[in-house]
Amino acid sequence: MLGLMAMFLQAAPNSTDPPPPAAGQPAPCPTDTNGDIVVCGRQDRDESFRLRPLPERYVEDRQFRLKLPGGSTVSPHADQGRLGDPQAKVTLKIPF
Image (cartoon, rainbow, N blue to C red; front, side, top):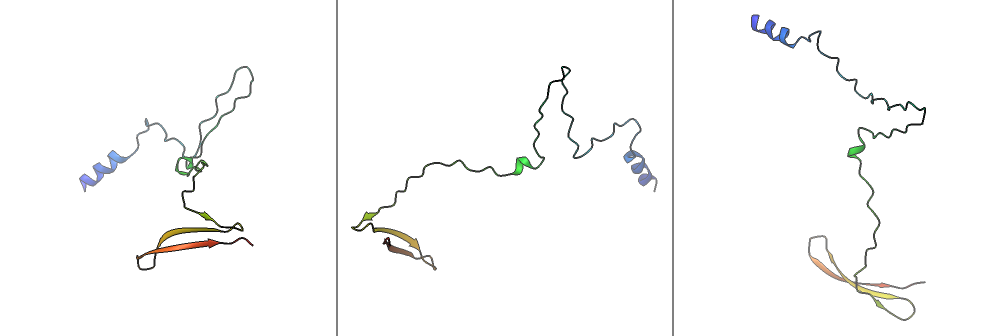
């Protein structure tokens, strides 16, 4: 019992401790003595966890295409089947 009381006395806050900082309260922007406008930019606290958009870049299409008369194209490619077996396919695109 005496040991439990000693633990509570140690955990009790002292009056000399500074108050904890307010959560969610940003620090005020600095002011200018000349009366000029000061712009303060701050990020959200969750801003560091957000994903940034990827930059657009030119991706070269390396797929083999054979152009046929009339604007149609033939392109062979390999796919994976439902059971993991490889499949060879040919795609014929005909404009209409």
